[in-house]
Length: 141
Image 1 (tube, rainbow, N blue to C red):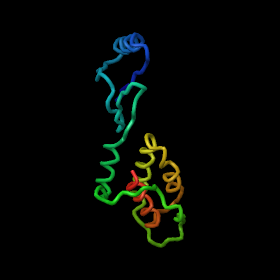
Image 2: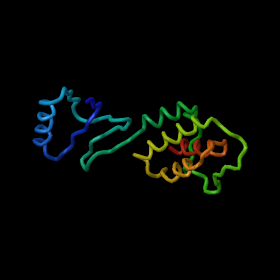
Image 3: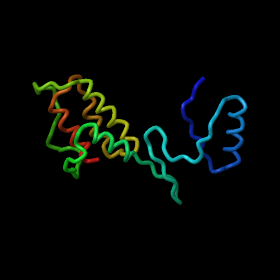
């Protein structure tokens, strides 16, 4: 069995040590120390708990789509825009699905865009009329 990453978390340091020792008896392990970054999520410990962020992931996504320097928007989606499949301007469906999947990943730390992402993932075909609102969500982030 190969496990690429695991997080141990507890208020009880003794429990963490015992769990690590148990794992080390049966598996080859490598302790990377306190958690700072995991699966694209930045983790910062504060007095009241932890803060999760995907700032680097979002910046990489903005670079990838070529809109890093685009003007930000204050809302994730134009409420007047209703997505449908009546448009005739088809776009690369794989590229669109990849973007929707990446937006889904961002909802882990940004639940404020979850409704926008859901609206974009229900269509079978990808049209420019769907791509433009997805870009608006990115500009919002």
